Amino acid sequence: MLTVLSLDRLSFHELSMRRRVLLSQLPFTVTTVVLVLGLWVAHEPLRDDLLIHLALGLTLVLTALCVLVPWDRLPDGAFLAVPVLDFVPLTLLREATLTWVTGVGIMAAFPVVWLAGSGRLPRAAAPLGFLLTLAMVWVPLFAPPRPLTAQVLTAPLLIPLMLLSIGLTVQVLSNSMEGQNAELEAKDAELRRLLAETARRERLLHAIVEAVDVGVLAVDEGGHDVLMNRRQRRIHELSMPDGMHDGAEADLHVHADGDGTPLPAEQRPAARAVRGESFSDYLVWAGQPPVQRVLSVSARVMRDDEGRPEGSVLSFNDVTELVAALQAKDDFLAGVSHELRTPLTSIRGYTELLAMDDGLPGHVRSGLEVIERNADQLLVLVEDLLRTASSALEPQPVPTDLVQVVEQSVAAAGPRAAGGGVDLHVEAPPRLVLDCDPVRIGQVLDNLFSNAIKYSPSGGPVTVHVTPGESSVQLRVADRGMGMRPEDAEEVFGRFFRSTNARMSAIPGLGLGLAVAREIVERHGGTIRCDSVLGEGTVFTVTLPVGGPTAVGDGARTEQAGSSAVLEADRVVVGQHQDLAVVDGPVLGQEEVPAAPQGEQP
Image (cartoon, rainbow, N blue to C red):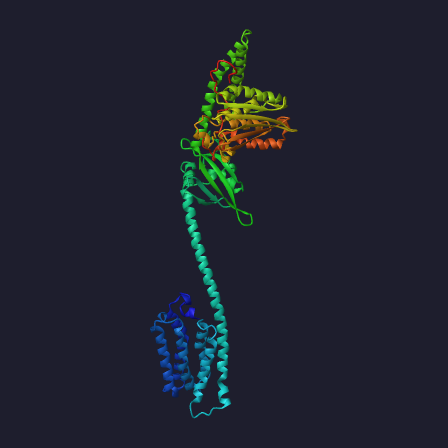
């Protein structure tokens, strides 16, 4: 009712204290005025009744005080003086009309409900209203000449008891509503806090998304754009056909390669993401030359608490310069390797001609064999440079005495080891035959020996252990050189990787030797591991199956092929490119040829 009196413009609790007090008093005031007017019209003898005039005057004064008194400055609950004082004019009005109008005492419900519904007296409001109502009906009985009897005192008790029931009901409801209001206010405050926190996080997310130099696109489960950052809007505009201001992904210029091969709509990144696919480093070419860009796209599916897909987030990383650099590197390696093959072929041919002379001294013939073997090895390495991008390092396994291959590699590394003060030792059985490619395994050993010698600047022993087993053979090359950190040992087989210690020592190397060694070992069906302690040395452990690559199951070969991705097509590196200044190893295991006059020359 009070909300209606405020014309439904504002909730009652949102009004000022004065307006609330006034609205609470108005029902009593209006009823009193209407009653007095009715008495003035219907009962002419009451027009000049002093009690009625006093009752109306006091009511209007109390109503004026509701407006004039600054209730918000007074102690809380001070306004309850108004409903208490309302019982004074109500008593006068009831006494004046007792013989003319019945039920005037029911008007006490207005101040009783006000007291019980105010919430300021949670337990005392209903009893206080009962006592005030009882005073309203009993006080006039003490005025002479009325005799006081039990019948006279009990006759008007119905009204106080009724209003006590009404007061209790309103009090219970009011207390319950106060509790609900307090709970609602607490929830409202928490909701406002959460909304403010959500808005802050949304602003933070927007700032982060706009700050990153990667295109970000979020789509819902229907493929509609939910979020697109500044970078992605530029990519979108770059891919749009001429004359089109906006369009779906299917309308954009998106190609599968740099030759302009159109990428089917169902294979485009957003379409794949909408189908629920998650992928990484998916290369696409966006736009038309000369402004075409190469993008590495990744997508992740968003799911709700029950695991249902509710959209996807895609990132578009511009890798145009990286792809161009990788292509330039491949072209450079191909050109250099092609130029190296011609002089190597000449060296190999002339060594064969010299070796045909039967009158050569023994040490010269031995030196020619070393030259010829290393020329063959270097020719193989040059071919490897040309074929690493296509992973053409397939071994040609034949029954091979592994001990002999080890001894040949040790002999080839002997002069360089002697020059560096390194002692080479072989611990192996007299003979150990297994199926392998002797040239490739020799290449692996040459790389390992070269590393061990090169990274033992203070000299020391380098030992190779050959340990046979039932189904596999283990080769361990151990040195006591500078070693490396454990985290470098985990990355040492990466292409172009060099350990921090190696870079700081200024030891030359590009970091391809160990990458090729791992590729060769894994294509033999084996494994290679590096264990190293900084300042104490390094141990490389190679494990090869006795039966050769064919002894490894298809599943294992597939897994090994996956782990050899470092030598796969360079586009696999896109999106997770490494520092090209890094490896703890020689350039493909090749060795410098010292100018010694006698003995084997590496």
